[in-house]
Length: 237
Image 1 (cartoon, rainbow, N blue to C red):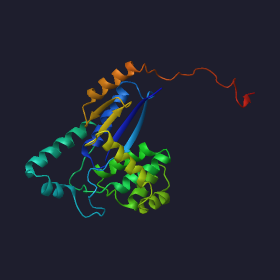
Image 2 (cartoon, rainbow, N blue to C red; image 1 turned 120 degrees about the vertical axis):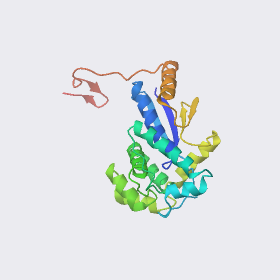
Image 3 (cartoon, one colour; image 1 turned 90 degrees about the horizontal axis):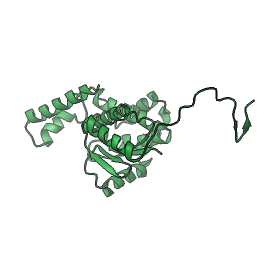
Image 4 (cartoon, one colour; image 1 turned 30 degrees about the vertical axis):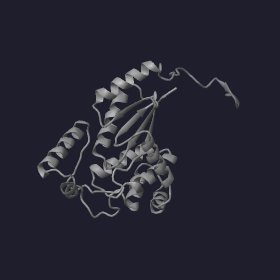
């Protein structure tokens, strides 16, 4: 038995990348890498964001966040520092205000290919660190190829507006059903939830609690020579 962790996330969410690293560190700190089964779910914070690389994030924030520029800068600077403490680099100066539907659809293809976790990490890094526009088919193809996916197939999926659309919509509908109003949002074994990029200790405490409640144990470690065995297909000689 493994602990199921469902994570609702959006690739342009500042706290989602931070929260991703926080929970990854917590899983490692508790030694539960082999005891958890992590599932990422799509969520769109701004479905009306542009699908073309026309708008930078900072000017958009100044115009639409309803706060003075110095307050917005202070908030962003704080997130830069928190990200830095987790080994992440945020570059808000060149970052785009981006629609993420195409990226989410392609992520479902990556999931089908068993590369979703690597692709998710690559998308976050591309957006926050490299200032790449992740609502572009060619860009997504390049990023996917870096993690072992077929570039041409990614471009085909990205350019087909219906490809994996239902999978993304199902995630968003599920999020709405369970009361998700913002991301990141974490659901543990359909029993407990954590909202927001909480500090490492919040995740550690809940993971330790569930480890005890569910009596989770590490998989058996096989030692010695495993060649002299018989199985459904016969015996090794």
